[in-house]
Length: 625
Image (cartoon, rainbow, N blue to C red; front, side, top):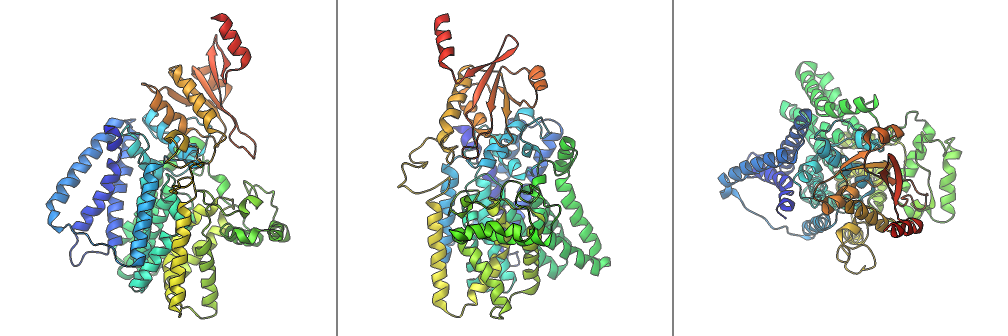
């Protein structure tokens, strides 16, 4: 139990770091979101330096992380104690602030009571953390799941800080939750920078707080909210730097872009318009600003260099494991299809009945082959996308998408005047996304960064409506839709769904498989069988999207000494590594993508199937006894 509570220490240090910056404020101190950004940057640099330094000397051990975070926390406690007289709290007042606070609290509850149970988290985000701890390094290792090596690792590096405390995964969802809170503050700050009054700022914050994708992501261990926070911090710092042209802001700007890219590859596209704008201003005044631009670029490269070097070492390419996300040969047709299909992800009602056939025929009409895997690497538009769903991967931002679509129409009709520079940068972000990133049915969560960038403009737009009753009605609709979000998804808070996988009615082990109920009991039985054998080594023969992480979590709870868990990628690995047992997780069918696991045991130099136990094998064992 002690280690469980110790595993929250890194996140407590994050909150304490922001609090320490806040307590140091004076009458000339920066705005609240700038304080949040300063604290987040300080803490994130500690995570980055600690993790990479320990990896470099093969010392990714639990004890090293424990010592560091205890010392970090001790310094924070001493520092905050020195400033204790400045501590004061203000209660939120008004419908919107109170509503935002309630949403944040509900998201926090969901983050704490549910285990990580998103597909990508169980497949590669957390498994690589376990391999890092086992190997005592972040160096590449043989794996059947390339994304464990190639995908940007910053969210996993954060999870490593907590899981290294030997307290399990009880708090690993908190990084996304902290990012969610930071995003709300960031949207409000940018709205103020664009000239919005307090009401506009609150509307911008509410737009983000009620964004279904952001709410759902706030209680898992993915990276969408983390990268969205860094993108908002980048945008805010860009607006500050554009006025002051100072070194401090440009360096922090480079840090935010660097951490955004290190969090998710889509940040390359999302941040690129702002990078171009920075380059433009630097080249316009080279004597004054060129060195600042070079410094920012150097910071971005330095933050990502260790990961890119490891990826190149493993795959001979810095985009190893992520190639299918990139549209290498865009055309006007692919651009049009991408625009339409990405919008339709958020509007399932436009996919009902005969309209579905119309949209499915759109690519062919525009000369785009729906079977071209370089354009549609997974699949095209299907009836599955026509359903309203509140799930991590396919949650729709219905109301916000309609609002963002109405905004440019109002601009064209001259009913809404928007800040030109910022609007152009946000518009360019959307455009570049549609041009260079392939479409897939679960791209909605990647849209979070673009939606939150547009939130300040949405606040200005809503405030421009002449009828106040319409503004109030829209706020009520946003709040009502958020209530529905909490009733669905993989981490629901409803108390009325005892037949579903609710934390009130199910054990934590079953909640790992909250959306994959046909698979959970077979997986748990397989791990229980392995634990009963007290293995020293387990080989994994799995396909490239398997659920690996529950094996680590269940084994840690079932055995005194963790076995060494290795990926078996070929027959040669079987012969050289010779694990005692092999857990095979083959690929299933499109309807049931997760096939039943089976276990092989090494006997007399060969591997024999020992689980599930067949009737013949059971009879043979009984006769031998």
